[in-house]
Length: 236
Image (cartoon, rainbow, N blue to C red; front, side):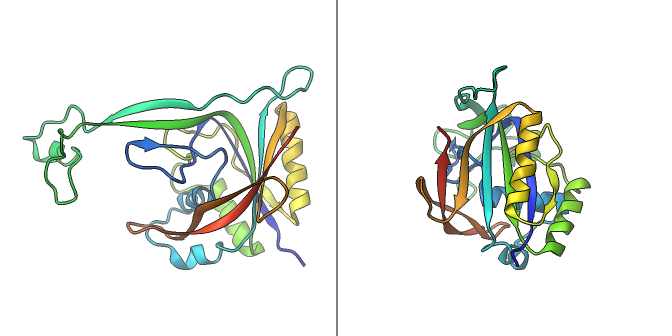
């Protein structure tokens, strides 16, 4: 008998799901990453640190994504909004003579002043006005535990970054199989006048096949990940 699925609805004016970002340029994938989703669940549970044992229970579980865009009055899918690029000045305006403020100025790994000064400009990219249905497979008891945590989160929940505040309840229930989970997602999308844009399936299927380094093995200071293959199936 197949394991049940937890359905998450991730909707917000802005979302950002980094998977291959450097300090100065913070990109976003077109859809939520597995590491981002599991990190979201950790926030709901109020846990920090490595979490290696907990993450191991999710590493090989299936995760599927359905992406939805706005529909017009005739029910036709509207074009996706382009990526939004923002920039942040990191370390600007701090007094280097003040011991506390000095801690907030970027430095080299050995604590010395950065080359060219402490202020750095970083570019950050965001998805605009998207909604994602994420179906995460797992043991039923574990799914109900994280569902309860999402209903009563210990820490604030964001969709990638702290300025990506969700506009809908994230947890949409535990369902017996993937078909029931996605049927519920379709009903919710219809109520919100959204149309399916693409789906992301775990493994190799017809469509664009990607290799993502987004399966977290260890969180905390020294993060570790491994690869997984996904297929992106775009709707005509």
